[in-house]
Image (cartoon, rainbow, N blue to C red; front, side, top):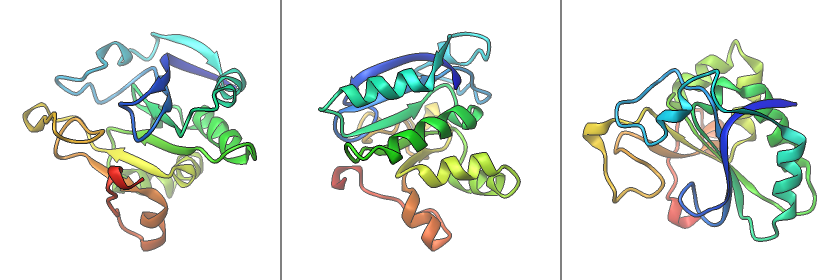
Length: 173
């Protein structure tokens, strides 16, 4: 399935715990002031890639602990990311965790999921979610895997079980 991406980091240590394969989606409606990836905002920018090819690249790297969807705004491309997430989770080769960054809040995504089943299913595939727009006045270099203090590192599976956003400590993963 086709996906529009801004780029890929094959072995990132800054996009979540451990060694991560990070897919930077192209296109973002939030356009946060001070965004570290402003080149990802244009929905017509980037390049077209294929989720099968990306999945094959992920499976070739035995060092990976997980996969991160970043951006841009990953939840603007739910369908191809859901396709990729399903492939990763269905692979019996190893258990890779899935993290997504989003400018939306967990609550906004669960509300959207009530009318958008693809969004809901993508959220259900994730292990962790870093939610909320980047807020330049709340920027901190001391936060693990987050840019500003309003953003949360959420345990998605526990949150879905409890019906509320449950934060996790990224150092405990």
